[in-house]
Length: 163
Image (cartoon, rainbow, N blue to C red; front, top):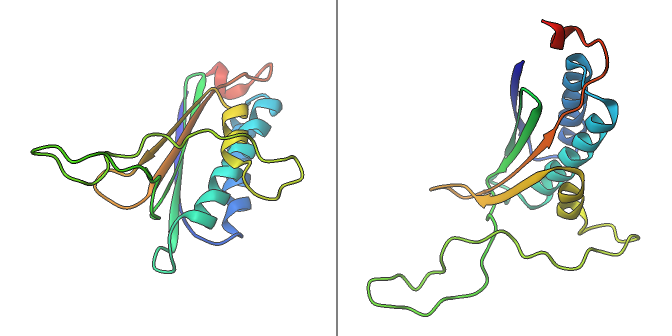
């Protein structure tokens, strides 16, 4: 089975539950185990919340969520048009090389935020709830892409899986 969908959403808090509900509805219809669906929905919520909060200035009013189910794997990508992941270190200039930093590596993993903190746990939750996470800047454009994969488990007697 292969399913995919893509949403183009406004960068506002009300868009986050919309993306989550669409994902949960898709997972339920496809027959994905509820525990796996829950993990993916929390990871998606965190990625969308980051896009809403950090995904650009007033001119960047949108972000995109794309979900793919292909066989036993689900991949979700959240793309914004904000500043992207920044490399705060400058490398020394060498002949034939720009003084600008190389493309940013994945953000460094710092100590998790305290449990009572209101911010700072999103990327840690995504990493804890999924099987593989990638952070990158958009190629040739402003923005960041957070994508994550999870191996799916299925409920018993799923009609879509039987076909």
